[in-house]
Image (tube, rainbow, N blue to C red; front, side):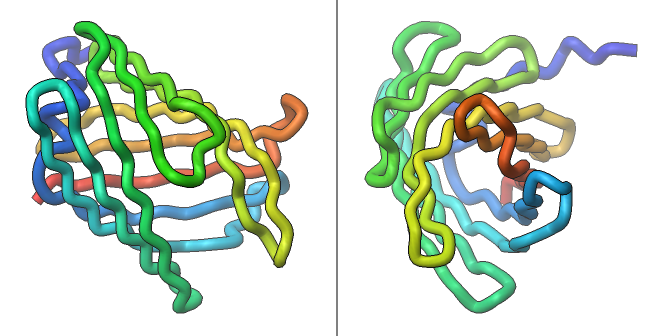
Length: 150
């Protein structure tokens, strides 16, 4: 049975504090990184800032700050320092779909990666995020994140 009563709203969900846990898998589906994220989102009208602080289980840390703008009822744009161009997002029911290109550092090299990012709103403030990371149209890694609003 489909629960169509849930509606993903970027401004609503990414406002306030969120705790998240994630996993990156290589093209063979082998886990290569696990991490936690503390996020804080703030909105002023149709413009928001989402601050993400990553703590990888190997001890590394990372900070990313998104600037997000609501373009229309279901469309969004996002920017971050490591994005090559604007991220484009769209909501549809309980789903948020983002597309963007990012420079990703791996073992002292940087790769330009296309992200096909799908977020699914669940009950009780949970969001499940599945991202497919592609190079030359081939999936080179997958990202899974479970988010919980505080």
